[in-house]
Length: 100
Image (cartoon, rainbow, N blue to C red; front, top):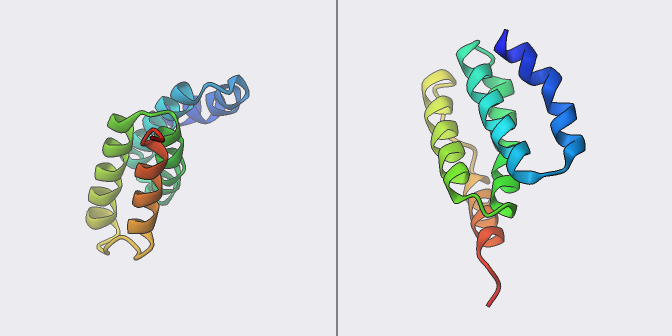
């Protein structure tokens, strides 16, 4: 399955050390996990990739991950995101903004 494939691939991607590739792999993996009904795993992967995407300067992946996370948590967990999420978002945005 796609989930098993991405789970086998992630350690190799991490060894590579290229952040954009790791971000894309985690985003794909989170989507596959969500479709497979593994919502907690998908949530964990999304939370992992958000700061990585911010460090890589990949604002599109940051936005995609946050919107996916928000929709997924609301739809599947019927709860709101935990309070520290705003701090995490602020940190992610701050780390993606170039120093002046």
